[in-house]
Every structure is written in C-alpha cells, then in structure tokens.
Length: 308
Image (cartoon, rainbow, N blue to C red):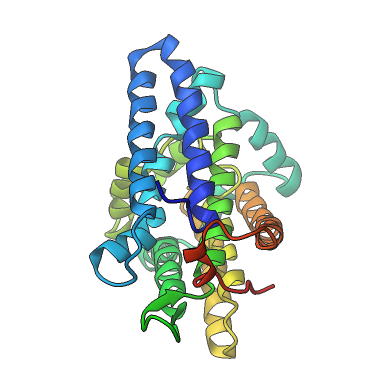
C-alpha cells in the first residue's frame, strides 16, 4: 500500500481513528455506537483508497483533493453522538450563559433582533449567515484552483500551496469538533424557534439546513466564525477591495450568528479569537512537519514551500 503524500491525509486518518476508538468503546452502551465505529472503519478505508490516487486530472483527481470537504458534514453531524459517550447527553449551556452575562451584562441574542426589526433586516442577516458556506466552500475551491501550476517534468498539474491550506483548515475544523465533543453547548436555538421559525424565505431554508446537517453541542466557540477567519488568513487577499469585502462578510457573519439566535454572543467572540489562535498554531505545526523527510519519492515532486 502506498504511503500518504500529504500531512492533511494523515491528520484526517488520525482523527477518524480516534473517533473509531471512542465509538467502539461506547458500543458497550448501545449498538448505535458500534454502527458508528464500523462507519468510521469504512471511512478510513475509503480515505486510504482515495489518497492512493496518483492522477492529477479527471474525476478521480478531483475526488482525491475534495474528499476533505465532503467529510465536513458527517464529521459535524456526529458530534452529539460521540459527545454522549463522555457526557451522556449533558450540555453546558448554563455555564456559557454565565460567561455571556458576565461579558455583556445580559444576552445580546435576545435583544439584538429587536434593535433591527423588520423583514428586510431579518432577510439580510440570514443572508449573511449563509455566506459561511460560500466562504468555506468557495475558499477551498479557490485554494485548489490557485494551487495548480505547470510542472516542468511530466507535463501535469500539481497543487502548490494547497496542502498547507488543507492542513491548516482541517486542523482548525477538527479542533473545533474535539472541543464540541468534550464541551457540548447547544446554543440559544430555543429562542430562535420562538422568534424566527417559519418567518421569511431564508429563515426556513436555514432551519432546513440545520435539521439536515447540524448536531446539538457545536455552539461554543462558533466554528462558523472561526473557520471563516482561518480561510481569510490562509488566502490573505492582497487586493484592498477583496480585503474589504472579506472583512465585511466575516463581520456580517459574526453579527448574524447572534442576531438569528444561532449562537450566544460569547460564542461569536470566542470564534473570532480561536480562529486566529488556531490559524497560528496549525500554520506553525505545518511548518514543523515540512521539515521532516517526504514520505515517498512521488511526494518530492509535488511538495511545495509553505507560506508563513
């Protein structure tokens, strides 16, 4: 079997292996955990097979580079199940509410929408919330496309800085998943359902996305904001116009998470801070890994220098 060429492949396999161990031990409490463990075994097998793809173009190559993006949904969806192995369904919202009240003197998610009432504001901030998917998916695809350069030997396209992008982005995402597993917080969704349920066009659409892909426990800190910050720092737009637009989108996303009662205000603040910290850590960690010998000869032709 071929050795893995990129550090983000190993990062994903380590995470999947860890969750497999947790759910396998948790199978003592019910068959659902055994099913989850077997599912992770299948995912590990599929990742290993995908990372053995050597072609640089065509559908197989796209699957090889995009499979981390495809894993985001199932890995996020399983938070509640995996966390229940440690906490038995207990969440820590009461703790976070105390922090929220201490920092803001109250709970901004309960009155922010009242300060900006009306259908236009509600649709606008729900639109800002949806920009998370544009930032994450668009940023990933842009990094993959931007990373394609012509190789002098072999006449094929290889990714340039994409391995660093994927490693830092996935390291950040998986760190948030571990935090949610160890410290699950549901967030103020009950307030959201009382205030926004069935209202407007985008509100019900987001609620549908929540029902399909969200998992209780992933509120503190806000991974949506943190990952958006990391994408911005990874891409580092040099154009003043793009930089301004990017900052405006992240600001709108930050406010919208509180406005729509998706998160407590302290979740948003923690998302901004941890996004910066996780970027610094995982970027530094990747730099350390880059100093190690390349896994195999094929990797030596495609590994590139990381941006600092």
